Length: 65
Image (cartoon, rainbow, N blue to C red):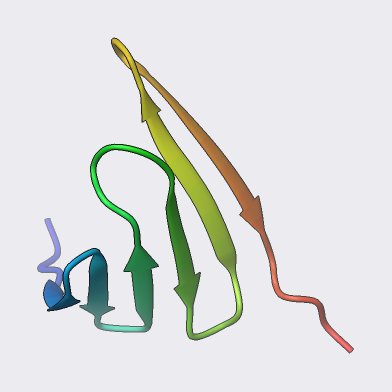
């Protein structure tokens, strides 16, 4: 099993900087309600936990010119 690196830093209440070996992302929002994530490659994800074992996620990739 390969070793992985991932670290999260809380910048402000409700704002987290996530860093791994290849990229970084910023997440806004908390446990309750929607969360929005943007990574350094332009990918945007909106997600929300729903009651029970359910969750919702929508991802939009960066537009290439």
